[in-house]
Amino acid sequence: MVVEQLGNFGAEITEKEDLGRRKLAYPIKKRTEGLYWLFNFTINPGKIDALKKALLIKESLIRFLLVKREA
Image (cartoon, rainbow, N blue to C red; front, side, top):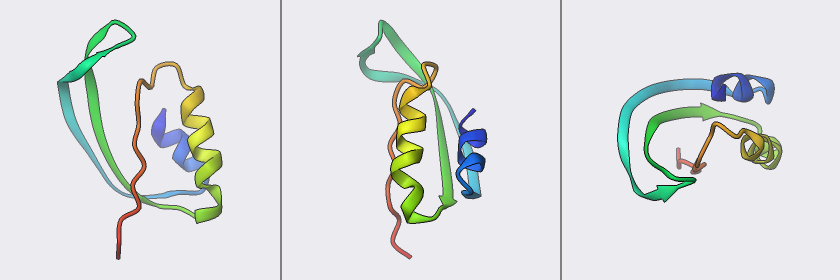
């Protein structure tokens, strides 16, 4: 799902890592565990806001964090 969204916005995934199932710091929507993934990707900076909006719509995605990595 996230890979598809990144592809839709023209992002190039350079690294994808499954961090496994982990306990959440606090319950979110009555859930206490979640699956964690780490994606490193490059994307046109002008498409970041649209990507954030598309990810917020996904009900199966509880939380996400986009961080700009310095080169």
